Length: 237
Image (tube, rainbow, N blue to C red; front, side, top):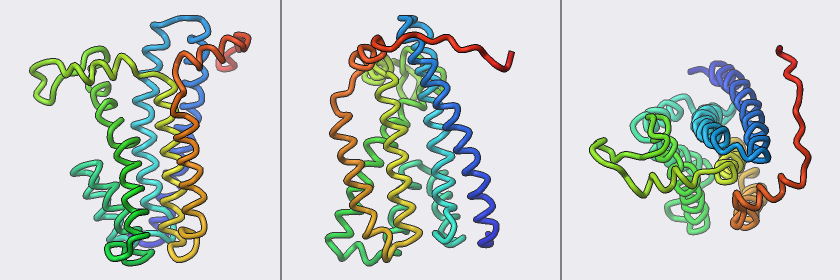
């Protein structure tokens, strides 16, 4: 790909990301409405749809980040996409490692190695792990998760499906946004922006993780009950 082709794809994918964020906002509004109405069925199905949307948005943002202008070389982009096609985790790991190469010799620099490992751990906890649950939903396992061979129930994942809620999924979305900021700093301005902004963005992310640690669906319901239910007219009808 030429630099212009990389830029053009980035622009197109950015538009896709913006539209998906509009869909996200709409779904969240719907879920909040039905939480206040105590409509458990609508809350459940729209929560599952929100989880699927996160999978879609994660994919879109991955491609957007990889094609960030003045970032990766065309050959690097192809390697990253190829790794991701084999395994999601491998794509993210290679993207981080190639980006860290632009900053310095992270293999032999403790500070850079620690930063790299911190990024990979966050990706593992909040992007890779949730993708397993989303895949179950995508394969029609909305109430009972099956094992890889589809021969019996995976009770652990079934329990996670049951506990899935808007609070947890919203955290997935938010953390993905933080990661996008951090990685873009890394690949666009590795010698300056990453060092200047990395700690700011990572600190903001860590503070968010601490602040949101005790957020639950019950606390959200309690907050929503304090707000009046507004029924908006659908302008499309």
